[in-house]
Each structure stands twice: as C-alpha cells, then as structure tokens.
Amino acid sequence: MMRKNGKYVERAFGVASESYREIGVNVEHALERLATIPISLHCWQGDDVRGFENTDSELGGGLAVTGNYPGRARTPDEMRADFEKALSLIPGQHRINLHACYGEFNGHRVDRDEVSSEHFQNWIDWAKARRLGMDFNPTFFAHPRAADGLTLTHRDDGIRKFWIEHGIRCREIGAAIGKALGTPCLTNLWIPDGSKEAPVDRKTPRERLAASLDAIFKKRISSKLNLDAVEPKLFGIGSESYVVGSHEFYLGYAITRRKLLCLDAGHYHPTESIADKITAVLQYLPEILLHVSRGVRWDSDHVVILTDDLRAIAGEIVTNGYLGRVHIGLDYFDATINRVAAWVIGTRCMIKALLLALLEPVDILRKLEAEADYTSRLALLEEIKTLPFGAVWDFYCLRAGIPVGEAWLPEIKRYERDVLSRRG
Image 1 (cartoon, rainbow, N blue to C red):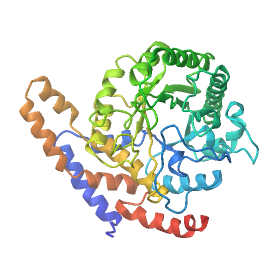
Image 2: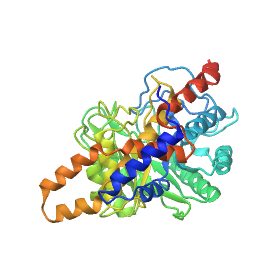
Image 3: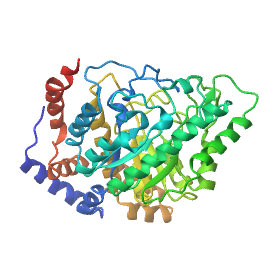
C-alpha cells in the first residue's frame, strides 16, 4: 500500500488549493464547514441487527442480514469498543444511533413497553465522555407481538397499545439522552406494517396508524431535547403489495404534525433518488432526517460508497444551504465484510461527498444557470470533476490526526487480529 508522508500531503494540498482558488473556491473555508457536519453512525451495522435483549425472536419486519464474517459485537461493551475504533479512523466529530433493543438489561427480561433511560445510562455516560451526540429508534420488529408484521396498525387493541407505549417510552429516552448530552436526540420511528397481498381495506390501517402516532406524540417534548422523525417505505419483504406507512402518508403526517420526515435512500424505487426530494419536502418542513444507504437491489442496504447518487444527495444539501436543516445518518448492514471497516468506509465516503459539494463553485454555476448559459454550466460541472479533490481530503485527514488514504486499513486488520477474531 502507498504511504503518504505529511510533507507530501501538505505540498499536494497547496497545489490543490491554488487550483480551486482559480475557480473561486476557498478550500480552507470548505474544510471549516465540513468539520461542523456530524454524521450519525448506526449501531445495527456492528452486530447484524441483533441487539442485546437476550431473546430468540427472529429479525422479521422485512429485514435480512447476509454474511457471517467473524467478530460481530456480542455485548454493549464490545460494540462501544468497535464504535471507538471506527471513530478513531474517521475525521470530524460525529454521533451514534441506537435502537431500543440495544439497551443493557443485565440478564433481566425487560419488555419493549417497559424500557426506560436507565437501560441506556452506560451508553449516555460513554457518549458524554467522548463528546458524542446520540440518536434513537424504537424497535418495532423482532418481537412476538410483531410476528405477524403488524404493530401500530394491529387490529388487536392490546397489541396496538403495547406498541404505542413502546413509542412513548422511546421518546422519553430520547429526551433523557438529549438532556444529558446537551444536544437534541433525534428519535426516528419506523414500523414494518403492511401486507404481502393487496388488501381490500387500505383505509382503516392508515386511520389506526394516524391515531397511534398521535397517541405516541401527544406529550410535548422540547425540541432542545428530542426531535421526532417518521420514516416511510415503498415495500418490504412480506409487505410487497401494501405498506401502511407509505411516503405519501408520512409526508402528510409530518407536515400536519410538524415532525421530521426521514428519507431513506433505499426506501424508494431504484430509479428514484432522495436527492430530488430534499428541496421538495423542505419547502414545507423545517427539518428532515436522511438515512443514507446504497440499495443495489432496492433496499438491500449495501455499504455506502462514493457513487453519483451519494454526491447528488450531498450536493443538494450543500448547494441549497440546508446544512442546518438536514440531519445525516447512515443505515446499512453488511455481515460479509469486517463490520468496523464497513462503518469507516461508509462514513468516510459520506464526508467525502460533502467535501466535494463544498468545493464546487456554486456562485459561478448559479450565475451561469440564471443566464441560461447551460453550455458553460455543463462544461464547468464536468471540468471540476478532475480537480485534485483527493489532495484536499488527504490534508483534512492529516490535520485531524486521522490515517491518510488507505492507511486506516492496517489499523482495522490489527483490530481484527487482536480483538474481533477472539470473539469466536
């Protein structure tokens, strides 16, 4: 592997800065802005969405993890160690994202309608010590009361009330996290409810869902502590013909109830891009959440890489001045490769995409577009693709004390040898 020493990186950065300066881009300003953008790393990449409830419930809910690469996290302590290793290889100050099933229950059976902030106190203390923000998610799957794929829309009042209570408690946990860490916790709600075959009655389940959500969100919680988001989906395995919480349903709900809408990059048709939806929904909502994924075959949740789709998402956020209104989280799980490396690859690529957007000469491009000079706009957009972005990225990592280029990979290999391989 090529090793880049500090002096080489600094020289290359100087040349790159001059290249960008010639098209009106201040590289230092771009790096300063980049350093303020947190990415929320998702816990479920670290253990294949198993959680720590010590139950034998199947994953379900249309979710599936493939692969059995050695070294998955089996305990909260192991997962926190894995998070720390990943974060040590990623420039910037970021967040972590927990599901409710990742609490610490000390061998006790704590059902979903009984979870509280005490079950996440070790996570909170750990995050506070490391100056990390935290986000949260109710877990509406992998449970006997979700075995038929229905939760908040269930015909059974008792089952529905059970899941409503779970949602209420998760918001309270989110508020406790936000209060303890001094930064709002974003609590995102997704349910798997739907049906494999086309239903006769599409209306009643959606009425039940709206009523259930209203019950969950009834208690007002300060946005300084907790932000609520709702997440739609096109279809799932087992809900191919009908998903109660569709995009249209949750868009309407978010607008009328002033909640954040979560746009998941894998939850739409393969020809759709959530990049195009960002400016549309932000006409009506103050903030949104992104779950950035890579759906090779629809919602297959592959590790995020630097694709045109990813660049388009970052470009929409940066170009339109939405950095203060868009919360960026990752959502994928791959058990065919080293799970810690998957975090590192995906997060670094998300940051690279943001940097590429920050290095675009937006003012010039806007001027050309306003003048209807589409020829020059297209030409410039293509030419900037070959500018020395890599040198800027390397310098950003060097200055942050993070391994440059692929130098992070030997660290992962050592961690796999010394830590992950001993987990059996």
